[in-house]
Amino acid sequence: YGCQYGGFVPVPLPVSASLGNRGMYVSRLRGLLESCGASVLVSPADMLSLATEAAAGLPLAFIGSAGQLREQEPATQPLEATRPDEIAYLQYTSGSTRFPRGVMVSQRAVMANLQGIVGSAGLALRPGDRVASWLPFYHDMGLVGFVLGPMASQISVDYLSTQGFAMRPRQWLTLISENRATIAFAPPFGYELCSRRLRPGEAERFDLSCWRVAGTGAEPVRADVLERFADLLAPAGFDRKAFLPCYGLAEAALAVSFARRDVGLQTERVDRRELECNGRAVLCEEDKGSAVSTFVNCGRVLPGHELIIRNDAGQPLPEGQVGRITVQGPSLMGGYFNDPESTREVLSDDGVLDTGDLGYLRNGELYITGRRKDLLIVNGRNIWPQDLEQLVEAQPEIRSGDTIAFMVPGQSEPQVVVQVECRIMDNEQRQDLINRLTKLIFSDFGVRCHVELVPTHSLPRTSSGKRSRNEARQRFLQRQETTEAEMPVSVGQN
Image 1 (cartoon, rainbow, N blue to C red):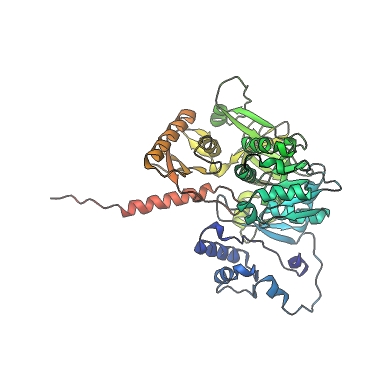
Image 2: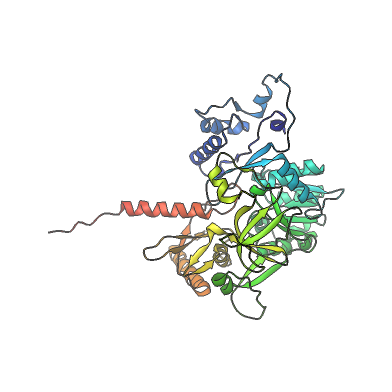
């Protein structure tokens, strides 16, 4: 708010060095500073050494903490009023498939999005609502949903640090319970982390009967993860009908669609073979016995916006046909900062945004099937990496979120790689697990894949916690190239 009042464009950036080691974080931060053309860098006091290192040699007018900024002499020139089409802030994408890009969000766009979020098509805010959030302020859900949203609608919000949640997720439940929060959101991994850390019999110490909207989004919604959370917290008064799946992205400020409130999760089981071979979401009967994929209903597009599923030629597709999710409306970005080429790739001249996601509509409601760039194309079949990941994570030795699947070039044909964070130390048991997973994936999907066990906490993630399949793929290929380069060359003898 101070930046906007002073005529600056605020650019919230990740503050945690958990994105990698010190060198990786400094390199990433410097890249972001160069990308946005920063003139001022304000950092937490305990991060100043990293910030200073990242900004070395850049033409910044000020580098320091918020306290040091307050010590500066106040400006004497009058401040200009903000105009609706000015950039409200620069929001960097999470970078799950490429280097983050700066999304230009105007004052008009973010206010249009907030109007949809707080209105009857979204949260339907009411007197007495209170929010609890641990979501980072540099991510669109945390920034727009739980910093700008409460301010614009004048409701109270209680914050828990992201690091505090990661270390002790039960604090989030305590905050909701004690402060009687009615609205709280988290990506699916947030609910899964709570479930994992909850001790037997501990649910009774919380009172979650106040929690009327338990929102989720930011990554594909897994119904099994949320249902487990609901089962574990039922003794605390948690109502599974509070679950509210939604869909959005930074290029649309935040929200694009919301499911219906007060009905909980609505899922569809579709024939996996039809989905993979023909791109059709054909509903599967319970007793049919064929392989299925399950998708969660993410609801209808916000009022004043239009969502159309299109094929690769840009033509609209009928309901039940998987295609590119495109959006048009007043919440859309003006483009990527200083990147007209990337802007043209996703935003047409008439204002239609290609989200990069794939999905289908049923009765006007949206079902997300995955990211287009993550799709595994095997012998003409479109296989969703999350289907492989969920199959692997259903095994007792493997935790939810500890698997990543991607495709790399092979000698004769592309190869599917599945990396699994493994806590087993015994070599024989590790090999048994690899063999079992390889057979399981082939049995369920007919795909021969390379299963690799990796150390815990080693799979790459974006700043918002999403799995970065592209980063994992690049690391794997680099490791392969290094290994091949180090192999000795045999020289024949005459």
